[in-house]
Image 1 (spheres, one colour):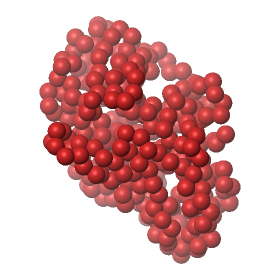
Image 2 (image 1 turned 30 degrees about the horizontal axis):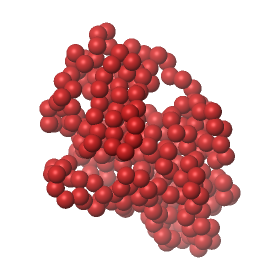
Image 3 (image 1 turned 135 degrees about the horizontal axis):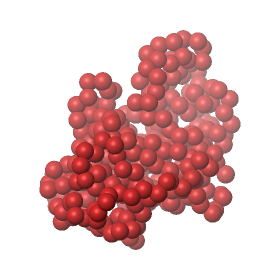
Image 4 (image 1 turned 90 degrees about the horizontal axis):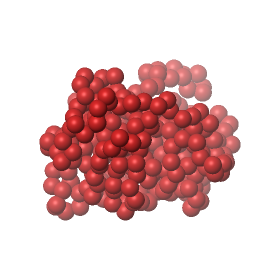
Length: 305
């Protein structure tokens, strides 16, 4: 069984990094200097290519591929292609879109240089692919999740402190940041929480909620139920959703919880369809899972950008 390490978004990394050769300098996503990266690509390129060919994702118009070898930090990075309607013209032509199209991160080459074996390198690659596809889900939810026609958590905003992501915000998701954890700790049950003192649907007009195409949400005393195209209904209990400190009133709090639920429903589909050699590697749902051949995982959203 693979033992996945979380993929750390650039927003959480140190601004400066030291290469294996001792050089020290400012970085965006990469950690190897150009010379060491070129040497690593020559030595480990064929091995990486063969390992990455075993990882696949193809579901609901979203497809995963990998950039080819080279001596630049864009080598051996996930590339996510998707077909989807335009949020500004949902009934118009379907668009071909790219995600992570210029992502530059030499994490896999760095692992090879550090002496990681095939299982370790593959585990890192799966975690990186998981992050790439999952962050796309967060972005798309941000595009479509509206209240009375206005985006609640816009995925595009200017951010002068993130010059490498001109779409605005960490990884193009605005103020929303996705964190993924794996292993036994990710299987711990969350502390039970009561979302509100009264029924949540008293604070929002569900008819005014906009979600992904073909998707609908409803509230009950048990939690949030999300219906999506091509999948059965998923009910997320209130205990699995986390109230957000930044929410200033009950309506904001409910909108945060609904957003988490819609994201969570998409992440479950991703976990079930991310494969290595044709087999699912992640547990189909977050938290403890009986099948020890699959990796436990848990997702967490922060709303601080």
